[in-house]
Length: 380
Image (cartoon, rainbow, N blue to C red; front, side, top):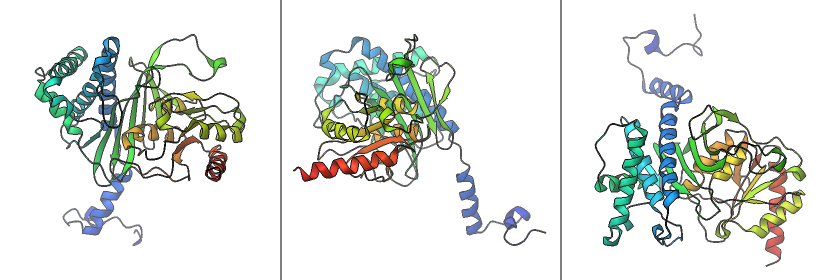
């Protein structure tokens, strides 16, 4: 006979009885602990992959006139809008039984202006062509109104209650040719899955010359689910491989990533930190969450991001990359060692900047960052 501490809830022993509020709570908790996000991950991979196909179409013909100005100086292109509409559409179809809450970078305001009619029609055409070429969805052709509605589904504020998808439809357009479609899912404020589609990232390492492969294939899809690790596969759909961050313990052997865009990183501060760590390799400068993907597979050992004063980090710039790195065995924090908190809405409330590395190097990195910041402060 089970003791009181091990006895199953009464409604399991006696099916005719109704569970108490406490028993309902315990059952709900037990189910949530074992919850799998497989269905959501499949949908996210599908959405990001199709968005990558759309971006590759645009990449071939993208003209300078496609770029509009925004107050935060982020370039907004046909690819941004088309990618967001396509991701919204795919999530809505694949997860039709669930309400869609999407926190995303773009909205349709600029596209509703009279002068943007041609651009809207081009976006709509690209979205329809991408859906048709994939062949998964036998649906009527989407109208411009459908596309505007899909884009504007990304107006959620996020937060700590419920589930919220987080999307950067095309992250990175200034740091060379690398960019990513970054999609993550928050559940009660925690990142539980993430996908990074990186159309121009080589399958081989981008950092270590001695490891360079004769394989020139480009196009990577990184994905991670909480508790299940991080995987990478070619965007063409070949078999995935599990990836892990580098195991380097000697900081002198490390290489590091930083943002190409100066507004996103203080290169002089990064250089000071690297010097304290004894890093000999030059920095690899790339914008976008491609850096998180490359870090997760061990291309480099450290990522540092120190935005200029006044810059406020958005959750869509880090959510997918965060879980891709942490599920690969890495650590991502602010410069004080605090974990990133995605539960506060659209913005991250963090101390100064973001750093990421493996567990062995993190104490050394935090020490070097602290010392460099103190020196920077005393020099003012």
